[in-house]
Amino acid sequence: MSLYFTKEHEWVRVEGDTATVGISDHAQEQLGDIVFAEVPETGKRLSKGQEAAVVESVKAASDVYSPVSGEVVDGNSKVADDPSIVNSDPEGEGWFFKLKLNNPGELDGLMDEAAYREWVKTL
Amino acid sequence: MNRETHNGPTDDTQARGTPYSGDPEGGAGAEPQPLDKLPLDAWHRQRGARMVPFAGYEMPVQYEGIIAEHLWTRENAGLFDVSHMGQLLIHGHGVDIALEKLMPGDFQSAQDMKPKYSLLLDEDGGIIDDLMATRRGEDFYVVVNGATKHGDIADMERRLPGDIVVDYMKEQALLALQGPRAAEVLETIIPGVADLGFMEAGPYHWNGRNLWISRSGYTGEDGFEISVPASAAAQLADAITAHELVKPIGLGARDSLRLEAGLPLYGHDLDHKTTPVMAGLTFAINKRRRAEGGFAGAMRIMAELQNGPIEKRVGFDVDGRQPVREGTLVLDGEGNEVGRITSGGFSPSLQRPVAMGYVAAPLAEVGTALKLEQRGKLFDAKVAAMPFVPHRYHRKGA
Image 1 (cartoon, chains in turn red, green):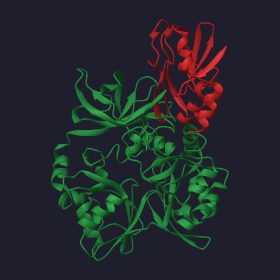
Image 2 (image 1 turned 120 degrees about the vertical axis):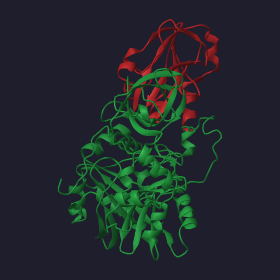
Image 3 (image 1 turned 180 degrees about the horizontal axis):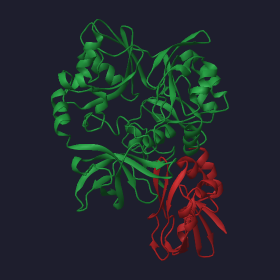
Image 4 (image 1 turned 30 degrees about the vertical axis):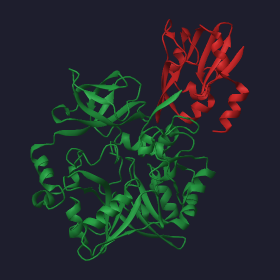
């Protein structure tokens, strides 16, 4: 299992050829109280960098981009039903969708966890 | 992830998308401007506030979280620092008559220490700012919006006669204590304030300092606005928040509270393109002023009073859970653009999205079904009565 992050504050957890995607703890903290989440439907094909999900707090609306390309195999209906999970457990239960990876080579361009946590401190 | 919208009590910089720090794209096109510090800047930071640029200041947008702060204010009492707002003292011979040329308020018959909501108008009747004006003897104490205060002062100095003086009381801070428990809390610190009724004001003393307190606010709740010398503001804020019923509340909750209360925010729901009649603020124009006119834009405003405005400010109940934000288009059943959303968000008290905006007058009736279009997505909505959450002002004799 490997964990990667993007500069747009998404995380990707890879197990075999499946990637789980969510937003980082830093991102949920910056957004504040999350009141709406929309996740992609199973079967949707996403390319790297494509808008994949929506997350809205009281104050702000954001798109969640797919950090890698692939086919959606699951959207997290729990965050759609109770978006506050994204605040309480952003890097665990608050995941947005799972992808079947098209091109695992795309992961090479992402930050590993240590690099991301260090980078966030500089923001 | 990319932040697309940052709505609410924001200045122009934020409306264009002030990022959380580090976003390389964020704030693109915004002029970086030096920000002023509030008298309570350190006080906010010590309490864990997240500071954001607003109205030229670094201001606390939230402490523990907008929803928690919002609900706390509706149930207990919240302390807001609104020191960014402009406190003015306008004086000189015939000041009441002079102010009546720029605003539709009845200042000649304004009673001492009774704040009046009014509007600074341009010559076409467009709104330059909304404000509270209180006669204090021969003077008027006027509180204007923070983002507009310097423009307001310049505008008034240009348009008022030369012997009318506009003093900017920049040595004063302004605190607001709002919520159903506000009166019992403040009475323990400043005895006598609970005797004020809604929209009454007076001078008080605390710790050897002079305060000016009015029973007013912008949350829909009972509460007070306290003008205090900046040098004593932190001490007073400490004394108030020492009470277990009080928490400090940020700008984020101030915005969601006023939206639920149906109160318009200047720069969003009111601007140069709107008139008091379009905005549904005709209560601020009394019988004498309607009959006599004589204020900026009177010709247009009196015609609108008689014939109705072209469009009106209304509330919207929005289907589903997703908030619609400022800038969303309002469409009729055939897809024609018939209005726009000027404030929108998630109501913490109602746990659903609410919005306000302008629609063509024939479609402004409560219950009218309309569509809203935000980023290519259509939402069903109905024109709704405001306030969304009932006001609970402390009206004497009520």
